[in-house]
Image (tube, rainbow, N blue to C red; front, side):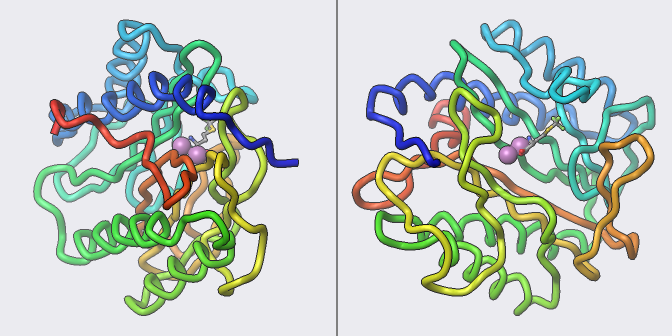
Length: 253
Ligand code: MF3
Ligand code: CO
Ligand code: CO
């Protein structure tokens, strides 16, 4: 069952979504060669607490850190560690913040130092894929419409969409219904209704789509070791389309 949110509930989600968004703004200047993902984890953790939030990943189903950091061929759910980032890496930082019991979930892929041409292309396609998905959201459209525009755009660029992980409803729960897959056919899947709040978070691989989970039980990597990029927003479905709840407010841009 998908629970539709009232306007008051959507308002109540704003602080969590804004702090998550502002965490990504905060972290950008630290993403440089030499920093470790543990240091990024500490910065995200401390900032979240300072802003009155709780980092949702910490202890979520046993996840050991406060943020997911997914470098190069890591698709998602990378666990921060003591490895230093190096020039030319790409890193997705996925922040989920809880405030007053509500969740906000957003992620972004950053360049470390100077990007390689192929990495730059991949990251731009992933960014655009998310935006195209958001653009089709309105009451009466279907989840298949979202998946279809994302898949079509990504494959047009000869990249591939990860199948095993998807966007999700969000609210008092971190992962609620519905599942929002990033592939599909127009008109298929659940009809989108005003008051739905969900994430869209396409993972785009430079090579083939298949992934596997490492022995740590979390880290998802591309099977062919190709680079992977991802962007994520939490959106609310309003009368005329999507409202991006995790868009950082203007002062931060
Ligand atoms: N933030 C991820 C998502 O977009 C989920 C991370 S679960 C964790 O859904 F345990 F790894 F944090
Ligand atoms: Co998510
Ligand atoms: Co996320």
